[in-house]
Length: 302
Image (cartoon, one colour):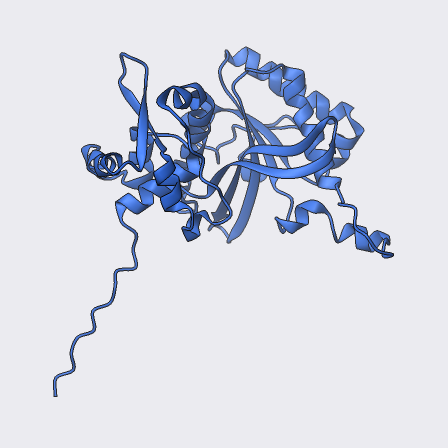
C-alpha cells in the first residue's frame, strides 16, 4: 500500500511579512536600509517588488527625503499597525503609526541615524559570524523611574541584543544613546545620572519585609535583564573636534559625579562616532571608555 506524502506547511516567513516586521520595529526605514537588512545579496530592484504590493494594500506609506535624491522612507499605516499587532516577533511592542508623510519627514533624522548605527553592528556581526539579526535592535525602550531629577521615565534610544560566537559564546546587551549634537553637551552627559539612578532603583513594595537582601533582589532592572546592559553613546552631526569634546564631557561627568563613578565601576560605558562605526566596525578599537584609561577598544572590551 502506498502511503500518501504528507504536505507540510512552510515555516519560513515571506519577504512581505519580514518587511512589515522590520518597519514596525524600526518605525521608519529607507528602501536601501530594508534591502540591506532583508536581502543584501540580491539586486536592489527586488525589494521594490516587495514594497509595491504592501503600499497598494494600504499597509505602508512613504515620505520622500530630499527633492533631489528621491530617497523614500517607509512607515506603517494604521492598517499596517493592526496587521502586525499580534505577531510573536513583536510581542510587547506597540507599532507606531506615523500619521502623515510630513510627520515621517520630521522624525526621519533621528530615527534613520539610529538605523545607520544598527546596520553598522549588523554588518560587523555578519563578517564575524556572530548572532545579531535585524530585529535585535529595539528602538525607544522605556523604563519607569520616579526619581530621575524631574523625569519619570528612562527612555533609551535603543537596546541591542548580541551574541558573540568566538572564541566562546557570550551574550551582550547594551543601551544605546544616539547623539546628533542637537542638545547641549551637559544635557547629554546628564543621561549618565539617569542610567545610574535606574541601576540603583528599587521600587517601593508594601509589606513588612525590607531587609538589605530583599531590596538587592528586587532592583527594577532585574525584572528585564539578567545583567545590567552596558551603555554606548554614538555621536554624529558635528566636526570630529566637537564630538571629541562631547566625549570628554561624558568622561568628566563619570569622574565628577559620585553616583555615576560608582555606577561605572559595575557597568561598561563607552562612546564612539558614527563615522568610525560605519568605516571600521563596532568591534574595532573605536570606542573611548568613559572611565579609566582613554585607550580605544572594541565595544565588547569596554
